[in-house]
Image 1: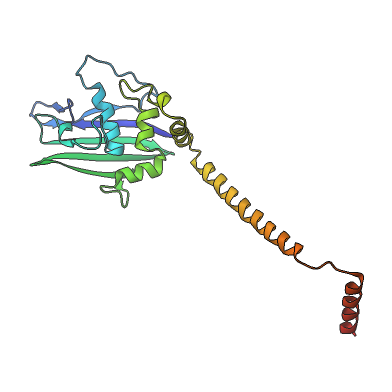
Image 2: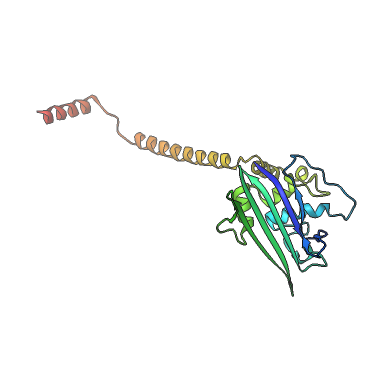
Length: 229
């Protein structure tokens, strides 16, 4: 089971950050620990959709514009955007960190997954700039399934219903974590076909054998008797 715990944003879309009395900018933080149900509301342009863009970007390096134009995700008054997404997965706490830095001809994206040890956040091996691969392996949900059936974007609530039957089946297998059983069924069918073919081969071989007569049996019994003496 996956539970969203906390998200921090700084310089991401409309979430520039919070300035203190010294002019220092701190991330905007939303902590979901205290309740299993949250309502996010506000006027148009206040940054509601940006929160969901931050979630999909942290997990899959994806936003409403697709998998490119990352420079546009940086606040106009900032040079860098930061996202920290904390969640719980099968009883373990993880933190995905993403940064987007403006470059001359676009933007540079960096990401890593960290695991809470009980004392500090340790980097998960082989996840630097390979966050999406880790997410798909651990969550077992592709980016398409996530935005189609888990995190529904504005105006796309019926995307799952409008999908073709094969596509809906594929997404449901991911959502219900039934992929393992599908592969198990395929393996069982493969073994069944293998043994059916072997049975057919043995039956054909048996058909090619000459029938055993009483004389054949008697001759074999005599051989057995002679060898025992």
